[in-house]
Amino acid sequence: MKNQKSAERFVDDIIKDLPLSQYTPRFREELLEHLEDGGKDLTDRNENNISEKIMQKIGDKDTLTESYVDFYNRYCGNLWFLEFLIYMPLSILAFIMTSGSIFICTHSATVWYMEGFNLILSVIISFGIDYAFFKIVFWRLAPHIKNKRDKTVTVIFLTLVPTLYSVLALTSMTAGSIFLWDNFRDFSMPLSAISIYYLAICIAFKIFTPRRRKIFSIPLSPYLLLAGFWLILAASIFASYQKIETSDGIWQVIGAALLPLSLTTDVCLNLILGNLLSLTFSPATTCLIIGSLILVILLAGIYLFVSSKKDTATRHRQWRSVFAMTLISYSLYLLLPLYKISEPKIDWTVPVSKISENIERDELGLFYHLSKYINQDEGFAFHYQACADGNVFTIVQSSEKVFLLETDTAKTSDAIPQAVFKENVGSGKISCDQDHNGDFANGFTCLDKNGKPYADYIGSAPSSFCEKLDYNGKEIFANSSLGSFGSLNNIVITGNKEWAIIEIESGFYATEEIYLVDLRGLK
Amino acid sequence: MDSSQEMTRGAIELVVLQTLSDHGDNYGYELIKTIAQKSSSIFEFKEGTLYPLLYRLEEKRLVKSYRQVAESGKERRFYHITAAGEKRLANKRSEFETFFKGMDSILKPNNLSLER
Image 1 (spheres, rainbow over the protein chains, first blue to last red):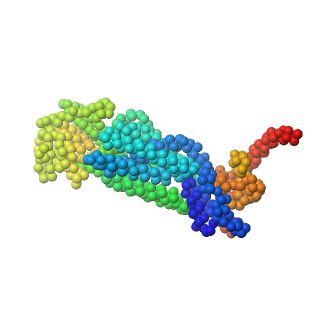
Image 2: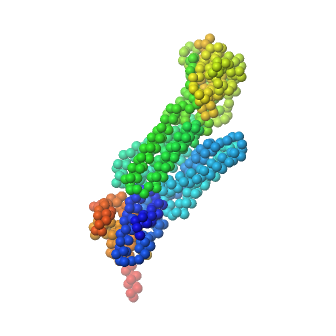
Image 3: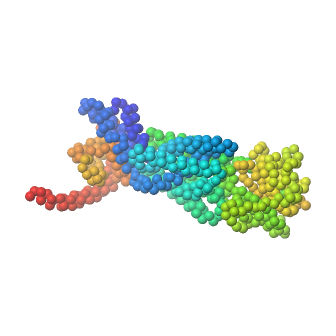
């Protein structure tokens, strides 16, 4: 070696394709010392072409890499075929999420060729992102494939298959069908969860050596316990279909289960998934921007960690910094639900019960809050329809679950009746023939901010400027929201003389809520 | 390592432990030189083989490493065989002795027949 720098270049070239572990910097250090000693020996013997001779003695890069990888294969490498199989759905998931994000960002429903353009654009960009992702993360952390050619083929394959799948999924989305999308969810989510779990354990075992395992086992045990708990919970909910039978609901529960999972591990990969989930399925602009920011931080952090040539202690310090930064930004991101986008602030002047919230809380339990912002497509989980038949209201959730609400039970009580689950008729098999009750609905008046009645209001009308709602001249509610986020885009009213169900849709990306309003005090 | 690579692979752990036991603490470069010298260049370890092996032995707590200034005046990572390593060495030696004894018994008649 002519000098230290050329030796470092030579060693770095060997190191760069090795699987990452805490021994990688040590291997680099010892190889450099080895070269130095070898060079000194040859110089002492007055030999020529020292650089070439040392390189020849050390062996070619592939042989070195193979020997080194063999050393690591004892952890998870013997199951490389299984790994490959379970990485596939994960790669599809990653691809669909990135391409889906880009597609949603550039989505234009007006011109068909723009759709095609966006589709191609999103696929190309996603391919680049995912190729880089798999190359950086999986190449160095997970697969135990020995030579460069096989690694390249694997990474390309892991990216190409999702490309084809993504084209099909996005094309079917464009065509208005979500068939592929639904099927994709059914098989890929549990498998992806298992992949991540498995990967996290493999990486954890690689990074922490037996010497540190005693210390490591302390945080590892609760991690395994918590992660296992969430995984089993998510899988059981997914498998049983007992509690929630709409695909939207299941998707949210799985997503919500994965988020705590990501919080229980110190492996950034899970955080990426959590962020990608939120990023993709929270179409609100704020989520998208913050999600992208966190994603950039995470990817930069992983890249810096993986590419760092520093010693182990420095790398661990860097890792802790990146992890802390990610945790802080992620925590901020999780606080997003506190900022309720598009939810109007309605001041009711009559007794009212938020029926939709009660139903969803009962269905989603602990996951209710998270589900409000990890949503698919339009930003809300459930759609509602309500119709009245005398004293009985029928509420249909997402065209498949039927709830009954009997108001005559409240005659002797001040309590507001609650909706009771009746049956699940299956996806898309029922719709409520909404009865606007003619004269009844005409008793309601929507007033704009100047107090003028909204002229076209009939019972189901666009009511973006509905600042107040009156019933026979008496105020039902006032919308005290500020700005366009609080606008009420659509109000549907159905009911009898004593009770009304008011459905309020406050925006394309906002939740759809239904309220049971007690009109008895207005008589 | 031109002949019977499989056998050599199985034996390298024994070779490294025995060398450390006989020659005391040593660092990678010197260890390779010592082994080559002692085995009349039958065992010429490549760096990609030796270092991962040393890491594996360290993980098994059969050796431990520390940094120290070598005779050359440069700081190097030295490897030291532990008590567990000595025990493992004794077991491995016993295994190999039995193996070679068996091989010797099998090969002897052939040798005799060749002599005739």
